[in-house]
Amino acid sequence: FCYQRERNDGPAMRSAGIVCLQAMGDEHAAQDRIRMENAADFMREINPADLRRHFFYTAYYVATAANMLSDEHRETVLPRMEEFLVALQRDDGSFPNNNGYDGDVYATAFSVITLAIRYQYLPIYQE
Image 1 (tube, rainbow, N blue to C red):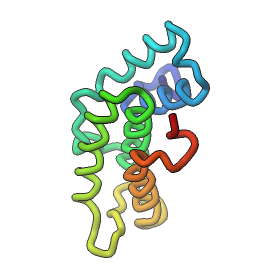
Image 2: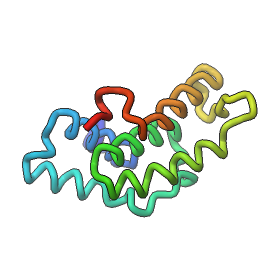
Image 3: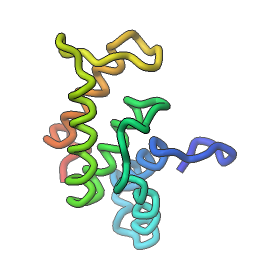
Image 4: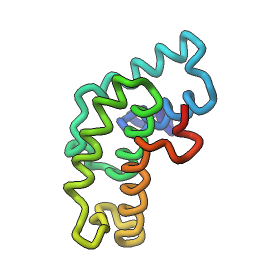
């Protein structure tokens, strides 16, 4: 999954592709299920500290995809992502900006949404 054929797919694009297929219900087609499983292989060993480029965006999509894929992915990926994010959180509740978008607002918003995925508040997360 990628925006442009010439560009490398990375964890963010793989995860966003999985989320899109899941949200559209395409996980029921055998070939799409295989594509999602292949795209999700990296999640088993993912280390959030390695997600440097577009960290908060990537963390959100990785956690969302893991939550939607299976209990195994949910139980493996979400705790690692949550532990890493909580360690980043400042005493005032904000998260440090790492990409230049709207100060700490962007990082904090994405972090809060990512930390809430487990609770499935939004319809897209619900099974």
